[in-house]
Image (cartoon, rainbow, N blue to C red; front, side, top):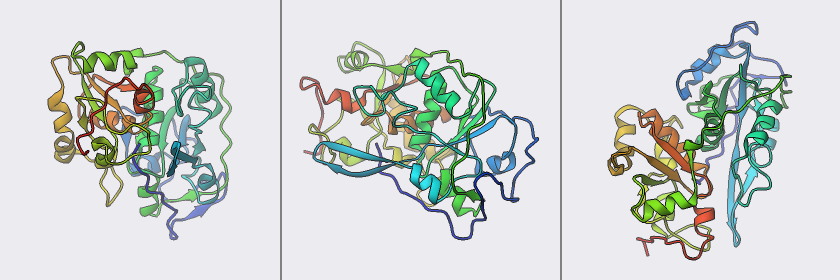
Length: 326
């Protein structure tokens, strides 16, 4: 997973109380549900639709800490959400225990359909909700939530371009304290298993038996095997490097687009075979979601995530790794 760049609310941003909405760029609470047809929306789009009926905004922030001897460490963004501020009306989405399987073998393992249905309903989302997700980092955590919704058959969901960093830089309103989720009935999931692959499928790619390209979303040094907190370093053989951090503009935190995006993902797209199948992975399926988002935005429709990623792959001493930097 790529390293985060924590942000804090801009001092000049208009601040409102727990459930209020500042006047700038805010539509009336009676506005109808806007719906989304693309995987990313702009900060202006969200400002124009704040307060719309059936719109739920999720803050999915998680911060990466300095790794320990046992491996990567992470910190929930809930405290920052409550004390440093969030987009007005945003509900915190817990990726540790709610939008992941807390009983999973690896951290941030994807939940099953029943767990996900409960998670969605717990933050006020049913099958008539428009969902906008953001984080305070590079968008990878928001992309993970976006991917989970898509994998459970729900497409009225988008990631906020530039996330909280861009929202603050534009001095848009923010709130402190928590937001109580709206009461809903239930969310019904319809699984799309093709959006995930398992270790057996990845092994078949490595062995040349499956027509798909592997895309590693880790930082370049981890790809090369010269950095990283896992006991076994490197990448899955045959992978193309596409670091999640390279998919955003460092000046604005906005996602790359147009020619910049096409040039950045070109090596991955060039590696794909006749099937058009691209499989992204990272350490634990988070940064992989950011790469999957970028590939889909660029028009690549056949994309899957290896959820176990290197957490699972490196746990198997017999699974091969490439370390070109060593």
